[in-house]
Image (cartoon, rainbow, N blue to C red; front, side, top):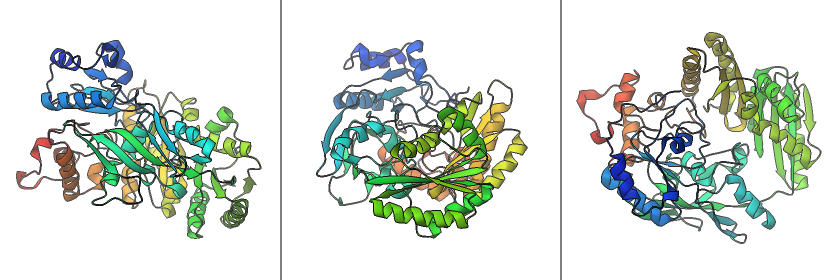
Length: 495
């Protein structure tokens, strides 16, 4: 639909770049014709598109090193890419740059059931890790809705979560070590297989950095035992605000479920014909609350959750009676995005996070925004940690529809900040939320982020124009002023 980088400061000789790359990459590892580049023009956020100059598909770490060294020497931007399932434009190419695809780094190198870890390449699918660990009674806990397709490298870049992140944590809580290649082609490791490593926590810094600090070539993840039993409580509510309040009540009661998800009536109406999950279509909202552990632990927690839900005003409560039924309940939630895609030409998925106690307030505000912008919105939430995924429905073929959807989304994000939350919970900033970074952070805070970027990537070649806005951009957005004309790291301001 649009390009976000037409005013690029880079100027690259494509033929000269290809001649250099062909010195160490076979033809099967290079794409340069427009028809071959077109599939790489965007990630899951299709509203922003750009054709790269070249796509590289390295097959080993040595080739990654050579690509990055070449790009560093010639001043060529590099955008690392996994499966392209990201929803913030983080993998959108640069018009004068290289897409470095890690798709061929798809081997599970080691599963160690005694140490409860797996060593994998970044192109390994999220779900494939759990499938490889299953014979040992183990699995990898973070489970994004795209887990059947998304890769570990992309999960590291975005610090991905999932429906079970409330109890088991995000990617940052489940990765032990990463192997990284810098823009200069230097290899280094962060973290360790042990319980701790000396020095600063560089691993946590790198996870969620959206490909701006280096390229991951190997990931060591933590595996956890599969619980003996898991059950889901599905609760219906006649009022969306009551469902939001019920989420806060569960956490306030000291219960940390394995998963706690919420869907409003438009979302369940889209999902049920698609998945036939057994959702209550008369309810204004439903909650899915999972308990896992030993049978005794599950029985106790289910009883406590049920009591809280009844007190919070649930109109109907049902409990999964088999593993098949439990998986069906979750299948509906995980299929929410494609289900909404069946009923609207286009949709725009948001990713704000707010304090749980303010869910009802946000839902009421979103209803007002639907009327304001004349667009429908279905809401699904990682409710337990306040991570919102409103799905704004629009038709890109109608003039002005996308602009209204974008403004609708921006208002949700900025309200998230006003309510004490954040502009992203797990999708990252990318190009989508870069203006709202000016709302979330002050000038000194952005200076600190830019200082980190400068330390790892002085020329600003890794994923330029993403995640951390220039101060000029913030000034243009009307949320920040540059004082006395003085800028830290002025060489990064062009991005």
